[in-house]
Amino acid sequence: MRLNRKLIALAAAAAFAGTLPQAALAATEIDWWHAMGGELGEKVNEIADGFNASQSDYILKPVYKGNYTETMTAAIAAFRAKQQPAIVQVFEVGTASMMAAKGAVKPVYQLMQDAGEPFDPKDYLSAVTGYYTDSNGNMLSMPFNSSTPVLYYNKTAFEKAGLDASKAPATWPELEAAAKKLQAAGYACGFTTGWQSWVQLENLSAWHNVPFATQSNGFDGIDTELAFNSPLHVKHIAAMAEWQKSKIFDYGGRRSDSAPKFYNQECAMYMNSSAAYAGVKSNAKDFDFGVGMLPYWPDVAGAPQNSIIGGATLWVLNGHSDEEYKGVARFFSYLSSAEVQADWHQFTGYLPITHAAAELTREQGFYAENPGTDVAIKQMTLEEPTQNSKGLRLGNFVQIRDVINEELEAIWNGSKSAQQGLDDAVSRGNALLRKFEKTAG
Image (cartoon, rainbow, N blue to C red; front, side):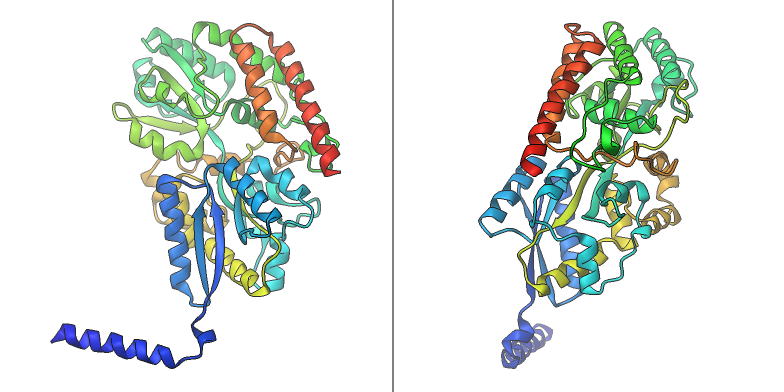
């Protein structure tokens, strides 16, 4: 009997809906192309479902388009065919390319203003927003999944080696000394690194407040030149090359290929994204681990400064209706809410993009229950960003990173000195910058 009543109620609702004007039933659809696969993709779908359930005017449709490069390439092709989505997720190294795409982008600050949505850039972490603002401080894209590199270390190994397991080495000399003690205790390798260009050159520069490139790392113009062959950069890479010989450092690949070296306790320390926390936690089955800030060279005045981000933001593409843009703005307000951001941050390990989300996460006891998960925030907000630590805005940066990886590998295998390899990387990278300048100017 209860089931029959339910069926009758549903039938009545359907009949009533049929008498309403069509316009009242039609919600505006918004396409969101993204690069989040697997569990992250499922979380993206969950966020979209939450937004769709929160209102009835818009339907957000997330579509997975492959990895970051594939997603950006697909969006460019779609724009040329006038079939572009309203929102596309673009990784941080694509920022300069998006800015140079004349007429393709609707800046987020303009979008929010036109839609009348409350929007204050000061609500967001400055180290995050700084990467995606123009020279006047206007936000061009909406921060979404931002991360920064940190130092993971094997606390069990530290105890075995007679080291203080309650804290990670703060400086590079301390890390070298710890690595030697760890090797003496039976561990084959002191440390390894993921994303070597991002961690060991790009963030090294910001962390020590030295330029990675001229023109404020590309923020002040596209006529920039690379500068990561300075004495500090050469000193650091030369030290790593020397450490490679004795496995104080052991290279494991260009992306996160080195993770197994840490998981299987071959290397007792591992530098990679704060967003790798979940992976480390699930794979560190036979040992306790800790999280510390990146080490710094103590002889560099002012170090440490602040680290810079990786990850991606959401860009809004031109060519859509005012109603769609109102929906996009509504979604961005929803996405930036403390509850949504705190949940995303806690689930993924990406940074909370707002101060409110970080505070809510703290109030919920997440940091206390998961020690080390707030290290990334402390590191990013250690000092107010400078022109050297705001971020990087370089054209053809995907290709430049490939060049850097090739030259670093030549240094690690001993076929080039640190000076020669970095000089060659700068020279080859500058050629790519001039190519970008010619097409974007």
